[in-house]
Image (cartoon, rainbow, N blue to C red; front, side):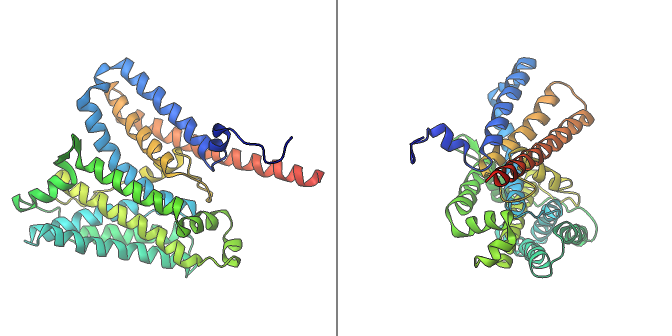
Length: 338
């Protein structure tokens, strides 16, 4: 075999970490859409497609944040509670007469403080991420509950009409603004992950944290950044939730941490760290919402929808573990023969 021979574009594509699963789940998404379209042609109506994209957007944003954390071989269980905290704080401030955009800025600062706390606990205090974010999950949910005295808020009022249009009801070039927000933020964070030194450090930490530290990577700072990304995106989803309902509800974001893990894991982001593409997170979030939407058109009960999604998440993680173990076994055999 000639050294330096040109590889085909397909082979180069498949060599990208996590691309194999991304292509697999993309085919799965196409099959799901075709199947649901056959069951009920209304699935492909322009109205349903438009609403479906708007429903996918918050799941995608949550998935992006969780993906950043998962790639470092950590997890963020506080995501859903930060969404609820964002929704309640912003709505409460608006009902008290504060300008909606000022309320959004204060809310962002509060949410980022949770992300900073997560990062410090995990990276500097060496608290396991599961335990650290389980604790902050409870703290953030408590803040959401006391933000308005343990009550849901009243309507945020007509003064917040611009806020509601920007985050949910408004359209730009025929698409809901929620979709545009998700697209813009995906582009920003995909660039950060794939084209910057910080992104390379995130992958390196997930692959081998000790080797990264010896190579001069500032591990604590990098891990803190991933949790800040996660809390920032959770805050945005909380603002979208507030704009959607026009009020603050204390249980907002309930189970969103599972949605984030589902979108990431199904899209090929390894729960073991060091591997994953944000394009896969798009597909994972789409599969999640297409299943919910399609099964609803098929008149499947909510319980069946939840069971179906849960099975897919388990199979996705199991596949990742099997592939990883297979690669490690192959390397061992190769080393033993050389």
